[in-house]
Length: 117
Image (tube, rainbow, N blue to C red; front, side, top):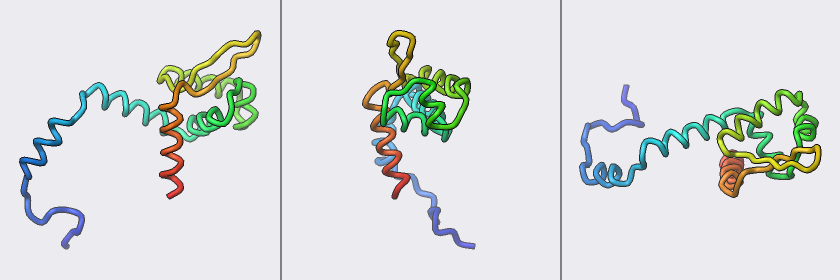
């Protein structure tokens, strides 16, 4: 059975391979990116990030928005804090979470755009 998605003849295009190899990133960059995508691989965390894209929220607020326990929310926030995707600020007895920086915003925007295609 003939497959349309693979080459029929093995041929390595040395000039293209060389160009790509010269531009490949360091291994630690790929590891970092892979961990970020793994973090984004959980629908609950993506929902939390999207909520925080819309508004700065405390754990209680996120719990109410997503219908999850505060303990579950805190656990997920800890994972995202460790990946530098969210940050927090204290205001009196309240702790409010937001997205860490514009890179996380860009990831969300591009991801939503891609999902809607």
